[in-house]
Length: 290
Ligand SMILES: C[S@@+](CC[C@H](N)C(=O)[O-])C[C@H]1O[C@@H](n2cnc3c(N)ncnc32)[C@H](O)[C@@H]1O
Image 1 (cartoon, rainbow, N blue to C red):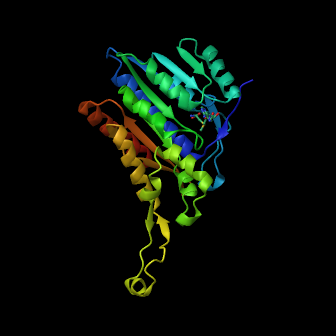
Image 2: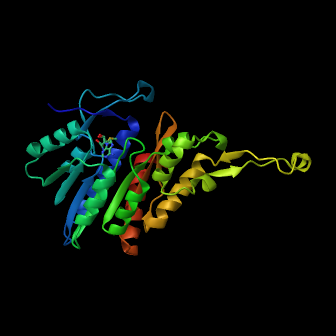
Image 3: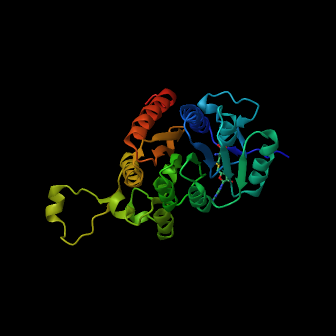
C-alpha cells in the first residue's frame, strides 16, 4: 500500500518548486562535465504528499497527490547518476523502496538512519569525481548543527536546508527569564554552540533618569533580539563553515515565519560561488519576488 504523507501548506509547494528549478539547472549545467552527480535527501518522506492547504490562503486544493522532494528529484531530466533517500519512519522507507519499481532506470539507494548519521556517512562516500545536492527538510528540531560541518567539509555538496526558525523563536521567549532550562541542550544542539544566550539576549535599555535613581546593583531584565537579528546571526554562523551562503528566504504560514530556507555551497572555488549566487537569486526572486 502506498503511504501518503500529510504535512505542509503553500510554503511546502514553494520550497519544492525552488528545489525542482535548482535540480534542473544543476543536472543540465553539469551534464557534460566529468562528474558523477548525486541527489541525497536525508529527511526524504515518502515521495509524495497530500498538501494540507488552508482555505484562508485562497489556494485550490487539487484532489490528487503532489510530488514531494523525492519524486521531484526522480522526475528531473537529465537525471542524477545516483539517488540516496533516507528516512527514519519505517512506513516511509517502505514507500521509498516501492519507488524502485516505478523508476527501474534510476539508481536508487534507500536507508533508514537518523539523518545526523546518514549525512556524515553519505559525505564520506563521495570520491574526487562525485558532486552532490543534499536536501535537508526536517519537520522541526531533528537536525544537529554539527551535521552541517560534514557537508561543508565535503567541498562537493550544494545544500538546500530548512532551518526551523519558528521553533527557535518559541524556545527563546522575548523575556530571557522565561527560557526553560530543559530547552537549553536542544538549542545548543540546533545552533551548534552554547553562546546563543550571549548572542541573542541583551540587557534592556533603561531610561537615563531611572538609571540614575535606581539601586546600582539592580538586575536589568534581558530581552531577545528580534526575528530578523536572530536570522542574521544564524546566517553569519553558517557563513563561518560554508564558503557561500545565499540570503535565506523566510517560509511563512499565514504570515508567521516557519522556516529559513537556505542555499549553501561547500565548493571553495570563487567561480562556483559567482554562478551559485546568480542562479539562487534568480530562482528565489522568481518564486518569492523579494
Ligand atoms: C518534512 S518531512 C520531509 C518531506 C519531504 N522532503 C518531501 O518534500 O516530500 C520530514 C521527514 O523526516 C522524517 N524524519 C523525522 N525525524 C528524522 C530523523 N531524525 N532522521 C531521518 N528522518 C527523519 C519523517 O519521517 C518525515 O518523513
